[in-house]
Image 1 (tube, rainbow, N blue to C red):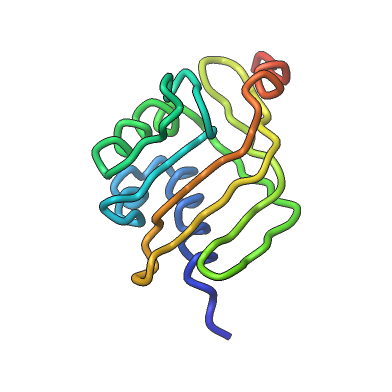
Image 2: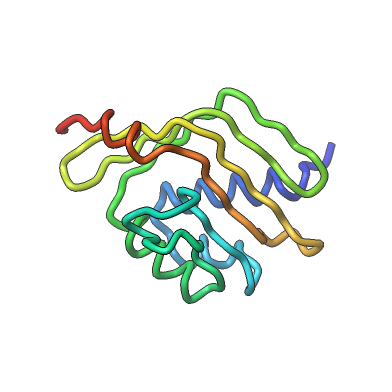
Length: 134
C-alpha cells in the first residue's frame, strides 16, 4: 500500500525537525507555504499572521527548531483529502527547560506532495505552565 503524500510529508517534516536538518526540512515545503506554530500571536510570531514563504519559514526554523530538542507523540491521526491532523503532544527541550505542548498538529500538501501549510493548535499558557528545568 502506498503511503498518503500528506502522511509521508508530515513524517519527513518531523524527522528533519528532530534531526535539526534545516535543508531537509525546508525542501519539504512549497515556495508559498505557511507555518503557524502555534496559530495566533506568539513570541515567534508577534503579529499572529504566520510565517509565509521559504525565507520566513527558514527564520522560524532558526528561532524555534534549531535551538530545541524535539519529540513528537501523537495518539491519533486523521487523514482527509490532502490534509492530516495529529492529536497528541510535542516535548520541547530548550534553554534548560522541558515544555510539553499538547494540541492538534496539521499538515496540508499541494498536488506535488509539498507541504503547503503546517499549523499547530496549542496553547502557549498551558505549555509554559508545564515547563520544568532539565
